[in-house]
Image (cartoon, rainbow, N blue to C red; front, side):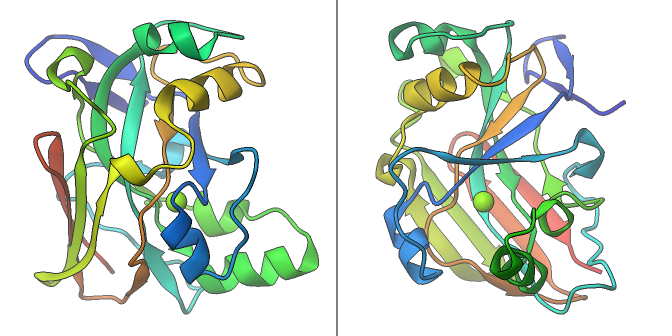
Length: 218
Ligand code: MG
């Protein structure tokens, strides 16, 4: 079982479901040629896809185009369903950094056929995920700088202030569909600048004052 801790405490959470938002930053939706959606677009990654800092992303043999997407991760601390946006933030235990690894060629082929994307997003190693800092240590989760570099070269540099759906609305929306349990994680979408990595590259993902991941690719 994969677990993640709250830094500075002895709290450990078994990772549950990982609910992800697609197209939650307008500039990123534009760079992929997608419409900006009216309601959040959701998909899930299994807990088996999680790896930690220093572990290696292994690109599956069925893809020739693996992309990085740095994202703010929200850890749920308390079970909730059908919560209002006004009450949603009390269920957040902490914040971390993640990379939503995506097999873009596979995803595009499946999307074109109207088929589910799971194998493009949920393969083993597709979810590098840091430990979490306590929610109370983040005064404003919508004022965070998200960065990703490949081999030391900056590729993504965005702000969580550009999210289309904000965290209280995201939790309210998701909890109206899926009960959220302690250890569930929400990936809140990626800013612009996504691109390809190849075997031998090293990604450094950072959310300033939240966390950092150094992840080789094989
Ligand atoms: Mg993403």
